[in-house]
Image (cartoon, rainbow, N blue to C red; front, side, top):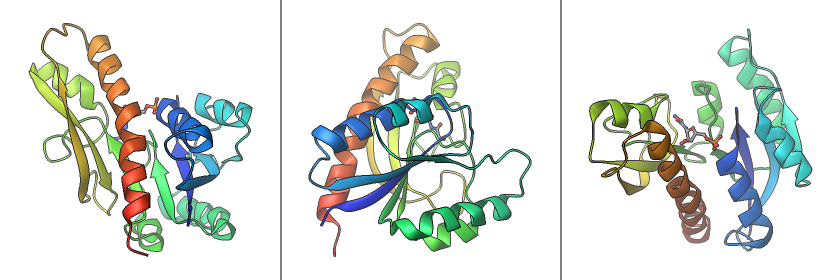
Length: 193
Ligand code: GAR
């Protein structure tokens, strides 16, 4: 059975775009259906990209809202969609325990660092400032902590020869784009029914 997923974004949406294309005609074609692209920010460029590609989109602005009240509205929006998974792709808002408990081990995130070493926003800038020779990208389940959920997969990012943050981000994003769909495919196909 194909998994029904929603992709959550807050901004650019480059990971989302790759997943949408893979779901339509590539690696993810036989294992998932994207039922919704959701954003908490009306100005997220990724929303327009998803709409232009013909996928359903929705936005509930989160600015100024209490975390739980906002998440309750999002849960109401999602309920009729009967989702199997929620895929976070640059979703820059902590999910409340209320939300996490509604989708236990069903929310996946990609993080531009080793989640055991760096949590939060700015993973590539952290690696750059530390002068690391290598870092990694992590795909993990989302739990109630900040980037503390069980790790599903990690891939190494060699930083040698990269002198600028922009170069690290470019190489890192390329790795994310390749990795995320591959890991999701593995997960969706091998999940115990
Ligand atoms: C990606 O680098 C993703 O790993 C990161 O935000 C970027 C989103 O880019 N996520 C986090 O830092 C989560 N803590 P995109 O909107 O182009 O996919």
